[in-house]
Image (tube, helix red, strand yellow):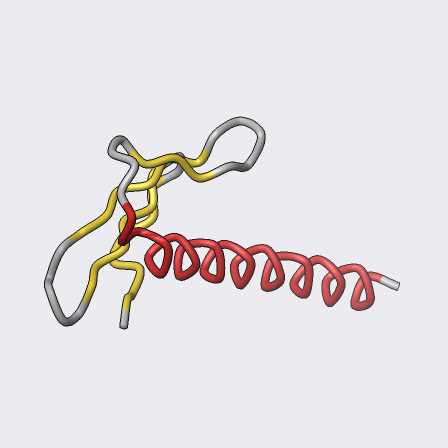
Length: 72
């Protein structure tokens, strides 16, 4: 299992609960996630980071929609 421990744009940190290893991803201008070391075991950490970012984006869209509806 992995969890996002910190997000400070453009960096997102994902920690593995079992190994306590932390992965630092950088969000590029085009939205891609990069890692300083290309490693075979970063797939699950990358998916966790992407899911977190999607969740943030969906929450922002929901808030904008609610604010727009309330303003009418």
